[in-house]
Image (cartoon, rainbow, N blue to C red; front, side):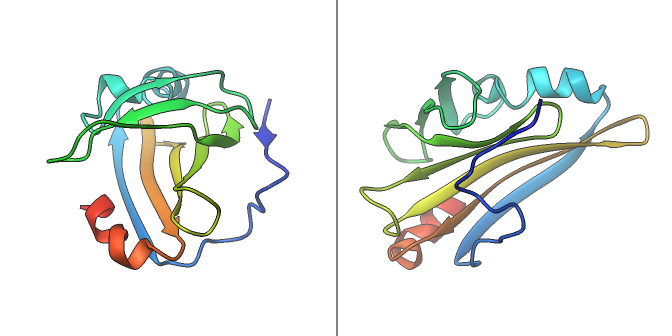
Length: 137
């Protein structure tokens, strides 16, 4: 079942103050990719230390990250999109809205005999110019 938050317009694009994304093709079925990549990102991504919570739109996850050369930071982003085998997206923010907001996404799509995996972040807010490049490296 697709869940989309009423707080996000899927046709809207965040202004490109800061964004980063990576993609690769993996040779496993899309259903297996969903079970392995998005909910268990801490198992394969050294930047993400842990993720816990219920995968339901509007729920808050508990995410701990460790940027290179920095200490572990824990935040509680809100799930915006939970579309099994297609997309998982959350939004976190620093202090209050529009200061430093970031959306993190995992997207999957079927290609040939495998799965295209896209993983990235989009940032906006007053402090993106000051903090964005640090987060995007």
